[in-house]
Length: 238
Image (cartoon, rainbow, N blue to C red; front, side, top):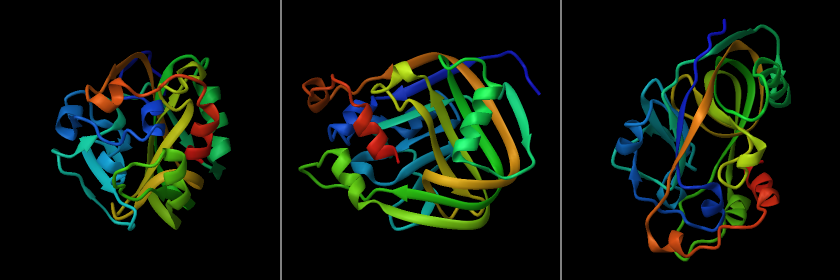
């Protein structure tokens, strides 16, 4: 199924700021929710991974727990949209992370628009990570991920939520596909490193309007956020 509509993605801060250790933001989940019902991100001091769909926001921590997130929690980096899929596709045979990337490229014309990605199905396996909450003085993100907690899910129903961002957006966000996983029982998940989906449904929404809400605090104002950070982003995103 395909219909020609597009939408807006609202992003809190930029990826280069996260790389520089700017782990505190002023935007709350309640404020993010005014801009949409679907998205991902992280929490202040990197206290877990954020996943949102159907208007529900979950916090997935480094101890493996997951719960509905308090609307007053703040987000140093994240993205949100109102999900209204423009493309639906039934997945009837196993596909891995690389295969899903190729599938999305076949379904979406070109690579210069943003795209919201939702997959619901049965997974043979999913490998995720969640970083631990940080204390000042904050280490760069490339150092933090060296201590990340990793989790393996086997034969689970669940969802993938995320975005495709164009190559030209690298540094502002994460170019390519950025996905988070949450199990159907809502008890576990995290940032996706790898997976094998046995069967399910893929839904996509083209997003042609990209807006950024920049932090106003001093550490952001004076941070060095220029330069090519592609290698660092690839290293941190797995």
